[in-house]
Image (tube, rainbow, N blue to C red; front, top):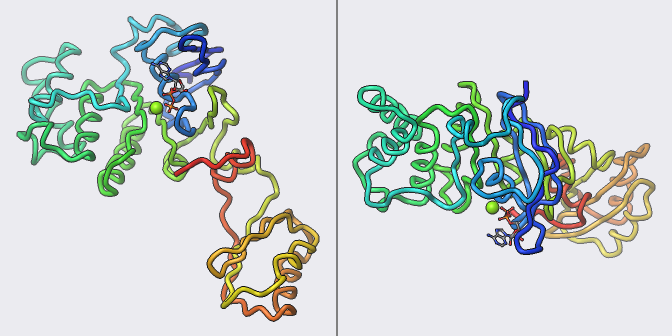
Length: 309
Ligand code: ADP
Ligand code: MG
């Protein structure tokens, strides 16, 4: 079942194209990751989904029926990249205020506020002002403000940038919990590991284009039959890189901190050929391990650039 269908959506800011014809379908109950470097167009894309900025062209269809954002807006909870909080209000007052905008009052409002404070782990600091919070706590409070009205679709724009590891874990766990409770989540990030860890489906975007879309495994399969071996030695062996490169199937060899990183295609007897070559050159192998294929490698293969952590 579709939650959202985005058709040929474009945005330019004064002739500069930020989103360049994106099509996406997001199904109900998914955590949908939008992964891309800074400036790729992630925030612009989700601002158009939420109706915060005008599209240059294209269409967003909500739940297979309406393209009228005004009618559908109450179903969305947005956690913007830049905090949207009232700094002089307490955590409790912030959540209660945002929840009240959706028409909740009295006992129900109180209960929702309390439940949300609990959910984001801020119940014991509910009377502190937002301005007194750490970056991670502000982010959690902003998530609370976005979800207290139980939206069907929750959109989080880079919610883990610049926060402590504990809050980061808390947020990632919360996203999984929100899915469990039936929400659909759109999650943008430039951190490939967290997207890989929590997202059911991922679109990799660069320069306003979707360059690849699929599950984590599907994306990793795009880099095909590449394997990477990390072979650590007690010390560098002169001329070994060149000899390794001569082996059939070996594509690339680099050496860093007593470790040879060997990129290979699938080939018969590859590992034994590598090990024999190292041994014959007088290398002392400490360890050999194959590296898991990563989304970083996918991005590199598709764009020739590194997706910076
Ligand atoms: P991301 O969120 O992936 O970092 P953005 O959507 O913020 O990317 O930006 C995409 C491109 O659009 C960038 O080149 C950025 O400089 C440009 N851009 C974003 N917002 C504006 C704006 N309000 N005015 C002009 N250019 C903008
Ligand atoms: Mg952004």
